Amino acid sequence: APFSAVMAELPGIWTANHRGDGVVLLSTISRSVKSENFLDIYPNGVPVASMVAKWQKCPDLWADDPTDESQWTWTENVIRHLAHYKLVREGVDYATKIAPTIDYWRAAQDVCDEDIPLKAGGTEKRWRSCLSHTHTQKHGDVTAALLATCDGWIAPRSDGALVVYAGKYYEPTVTIGPEHITAYEWAGVGVDDDSAVNSITCSYVSAAHDYNTVECDAWIDEDDILARGQELTDSLDPQVPSHGQVRRLAKRMMQRTNALYRGTVTTNVAGRIAR
Image (cartoon, rainbow, N blue to C red; front, top):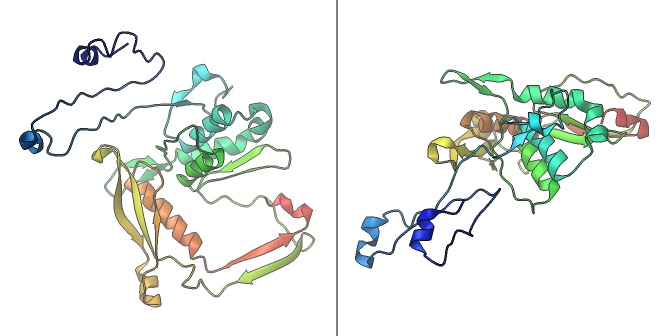
């Protein structure tokens, strides 16, 4: 329905025809004041309207039919967000792209829903997302932003079905050996200063700060800073709703960046079983 308060403020300009059926609407009214009174009336500037909502219902990969929209519910689970984006925004075919690998999707969804203890007491789910995006963004950018909230990974299998992992150690299920490997490069002498990171500045979306992005304590490796004699910084700003989650992500980021043993393996086509 139209806003009666706005209609009263703007008679003949904003009318009953100014509707937004099926569209979320928000209005704010600010009146002019004398310049000498401006800072008294608007000490923080003219108000800017904003809202917080549970926006998008998403499929549950454990449902008998995840494509049945009548069963979709609101969630913070990253993998469920990703499934919705793939099905609705990208328009992938569930029967060929997700159903054949549904066990991977369900396992990743469960990883996100695991309870993680907090230092202050209580628990929170391991990986949550509060990502917002526009429909004009590239699909790859949105997918990458979603995966960044759970340190996740997704790729097509040889049959085209999508395999997905959430950020947690998974036991390997295949082994590649000499019959697969054609060449390799190996480095086990540490990471040089051009690549290493020992301080990561973190930020997250804080409900306690009107859902603004706030910076929290950096994730720091004091021993590495002391050993190198310098601080090597990077930043991490995924759209996640908690201090604890962004620091868990920062810890994983630093472990990966500074991994002592690293290298590249080149295989023949049979080696794609690892992928």
